[in-house]
Length: 342
Image (cartoon, rainbow, N blue to C red; front, side, top):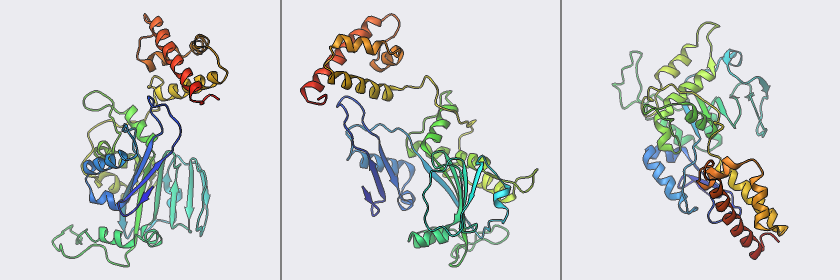
């Protein structure tokens, strides 16, 4: 569902799920106009209100974000690609492309003879530098961004902003956007690898949770895609963007680190899918409850099953058998009576 007047795009995948199990996730995208009108807290509240129209149970599971800085008068150097230190190994060049779709993994793409640069994968951390004026004209958002840029007062070379009635941006100025796009999986990796001031891993599940960490994520992205002046020095423009740009507020003084998902991380969702599919297939064959339980317990997933049903594995193995038997019997009868296993 899309309503750009409200500023929301709601994406939902509908498929069958048992009433007592969590179903598909709901994804809500917000336009820049909507974000500009709200604080992180008020926007998070509004997102929850929209989500409640589509789901009975709201459990925030993660957030992705685009962090960007618009720079007036910045000219992308001709050797920008060669001086940018990045993890993207493969490089492709396309000039004057009007439309292209590709599955990119660790790539660097240059569009329109250097008008737009994209590094990295959309499924991870992606870094872009492009002409925002040209892009906003194509997407019919030029007036909105002009209004945003015009809010910045002009300054003289001494940094004096005394002439508050004069805007730094004037029509005809060149504006480039430097943008980092974080997939929600990357945000989760920071949660698994970063310890907060309370000694526990940080939790970022909503926009309000994310806001205090935006400055640190921005600094990470510019270090991950770093423009070098030479082999020994970082480019002065890049150093300014890293050290002087803040989003909302300075980030907490933490040692931010990305880590993959821990092996012991709760996998109840995967267990639920596996268990549901197993029982449904056995129901089609009309197997008895005792046989199905024995086959499930022989799969070597006792620890995951015990965690899923909320019982201890050691010392309560009989209890796990009882709980599983009751669960399987109920599901088998449900599938058979309702024709799900036909």
